Length: 85
Image (cartoon, rainbow, N blue to C red; front, side, top):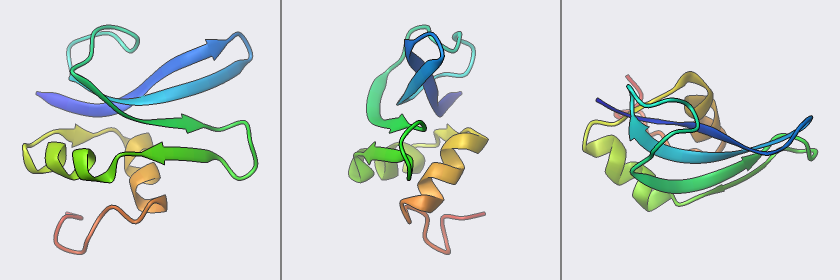
């Protein structure tokens, strides 16, 4: 099963994350299928760059977002009423 999740990058004590589509069995920083965005939690407000078209495509194909990515999608108003189940 494919998951949309965060992949940690950045220096020690300065995390930054890439939003990626990856196999659910691969490790957090392992192989991924496609990078669809970036999340920086250290700035105020947290900076999010997201390719919404690709994210919607992967959701339609059945990729499941992680809890953290679901929150990011809600901040970006990616979910419609029918998508949010």
